[in-house]
Image (cartoon, rainbow, N blue to C red; front, side, top):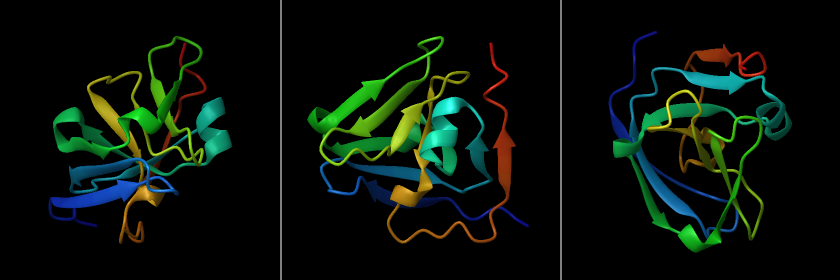
Length: 120
């Protein structure tokens, strides 16, 4: 399957307090097996920080860190939805929850299983 063209997508949490924009070609999606990713069951796309823009809701975000305290998981403190996180191994990248993107379908995009549980 060939990569999709570079496109801009808008995303938001459930209540709309947190809104953001990303630019990506969706080379792949990932599902991680670490404890928090398993529990939130998010399907993610990785984007560089230069391709991410928080449009609204910085004050509505709350942050959760665990284990090495390197990855920064963000949640809306109004509705509880996880829209994105700063990645542990590549902290200049965000993992975006694609289920928060408007008008996006993951159909046809390969999904890679990320091995986060084994990271030390």
